Image (tube, rainbow, N blue to C red):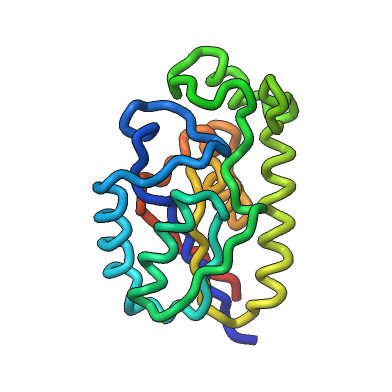
Length: 181
């Protein structure tokens, strides 16, 4: 059996990132800097042997994936399961808001105003990963998504304590690599 390699990247910068606010499932475009970051990401991934790109269907991830895909000669496949966590009424709040910070470590508690719990978000992302990894066994793929989604992806591939999960941050257009043998 050959190994499966997964690269997981975060989208480029948005105005909400600049303002230190939660985007959540709001459909926010990239800034000019975000587009430039995506170009740099594309260059850093061009020799990795990526065969497929999957991405969130939210504009910031989809545009990032398209910029990378153009360089790699691949068309990204959008999937809503790679969306950011739905923070409900807390979308647009600052990331240092005490209530957001409290709820971000209360894994079974839904964010107010119709949001998801961290466990619900993880269930969605893990389901996507289970499906895609069975279909792409032995291949090299790229996932382009969001900050919290990347936390979920990291926790899928390796054990993280609650503290490590909370501290895990993938900056805009940075990527992580995971291998399954």
